[in-house]
Image 1: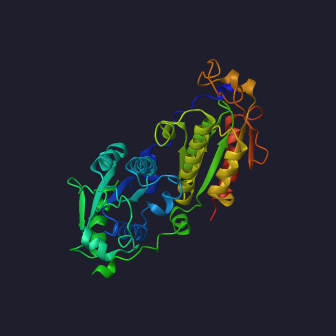
Image 2: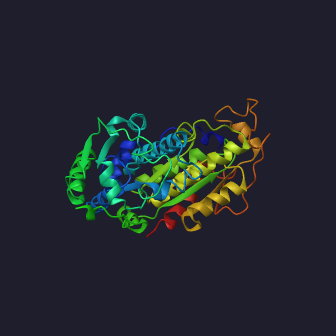
Image 3: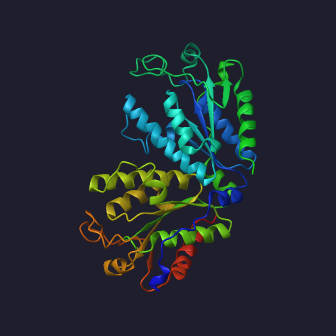
Length: 193
Length: 193
């Protein structure tokens, strides 16, 4: 009987999960300033995908900051570790077959490049949600720009504008619906089996 | 146009994801000594679920230890943080609608209780994969018992035998196939919509 307990090696593969779900698993990484519209767009994309019978999951401040990353602050070191962990989780969800919608400022090119490398370029879409500092400060949906926050991205902490994002959503030029449509088309093409 | 960028609050719900997938999302937490058969059983359960069209994902040493938990060692503190992170990830996957198969020794009752509490008792099945130290040392599929490893669970580090596991799989009494069948029945009932 003990012979039955042998080392496991035949897991269900990524490909098989994709077939079960009828889609490929990917990470869609929304980067941009606070107030640029990342989460607003991600939530609308999630709804559209759902209506199309596609399986997606959002990773954002709501389920990450108070969970896996509880205890991490806003120093550069902590922000790097924050994004490192999110990257690893996004990799797991993409591997699981989900359209993983990741919505975090991700201010540094190095962080975004690491994420692409870790998840795998073929399963990764970097989306720059574009809006300049003044626009975001005017929108200020969370009331953050009014406060005097340390290490605030775009002000006291840098935001490195993406130069090689797969998609740029210009939220000063297009409204939410138009931005959603633009990224949705790219996603649907990317997850096709 | 700026009015379109408002704070997001209508995500696709857990219930909606479950409907899309045709199942509830849960965490099935396999605990037991090294060599008890946790991963072997988890992998077989994954295959069976796949054959039944059910969506599952395994969290184990292969995709966790070298990913999100890279850098953590085997001290009690590090093992606690290791399990804390796995718990948070299992919570995300259960929330995403997956049958999340978690395979880690998880030696302390406190760790397992925390996991149940975090994920939510209604979405959690603790599975004690039972085999005593001598049996596991004899099986020794990874050759670990032969080595002189520090903080080795069951020897130099304690394993607190579960007293309130939802399921006990006695691998000394039943073979892999029988154990798989036992836990599979519990899972299928639990994930029914």
